[in-house]
Length: 120
Image 1 (cartoon, rainbow, N blue to C red):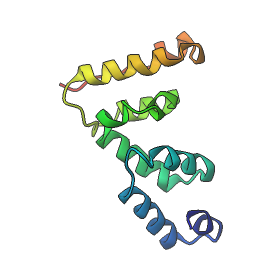
Image 2 (image 1 turned 90 degrees about the vertical axis):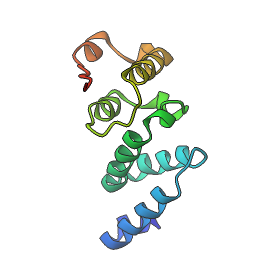
Image 3 (image 1 turned 45 degrees about the vertical axis):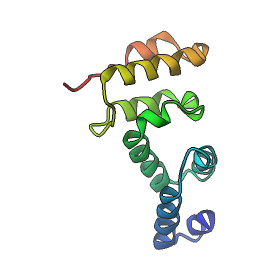
Image 4 (image 1 turned 180 degrees about the vertical axis):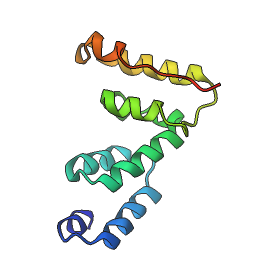
């Protein structure tokens, strides 16, 4: 239905589909939902994912899907004022896990230009 709503430019239908998906997302459906977002390139779904990821960062950072986040997505999540973590170390450990997963994908200058500013 999401694809049809996008194709037919039905904004109300699009909103309803995205809201339904986000209301029913869990650790078992997360991977498929990410695939749908990549396939449709739906901006509303992308924005809702960012909100979901910042709100549920501690759970998301433990998922396999987290390891495939690109640099831009990681930066957007970690720079969010709404990042839901108990301690800054949680974010640091998640970044290390993500970076060490496949550090050949990243060049040093990309990461070194990125500055994470923790809020105290």
